[in-house]
Image (cartoon, rainbow, N blue to C red; front, side, top):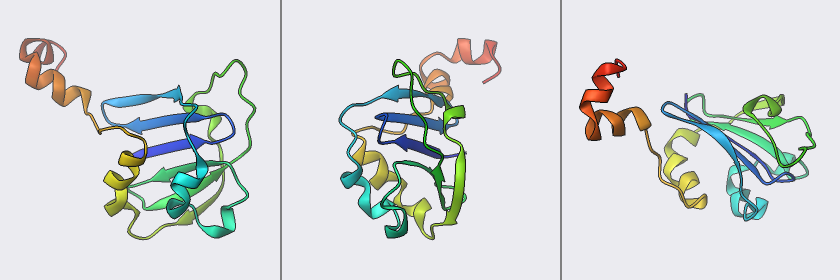
Length: 121
């Protein structure tokens, strides 16, 4: 699973990838930075999920965050559209977020093999 959700109204990023999952509030998220990842017909929407393995984009139902708290359950799709070649653009998307993909299980195996063995990683 390689999915990322962004709610631009609530400035929330939700990461759903093996070894790295969670949400965080990033006030610097700007919808215009991601225009090439949003089909024109969805330009009036503000919450999206990109599935880089299924090569699709979901428009999510509007959600009002309380105390800047959101979880992946807050991203409820109301429309899903195919987005051909999205999988090849994953690194481009990550660069827009000023992030690097990290697999925590791989990092633990590399840096702490005894702990990885203990947890069956």
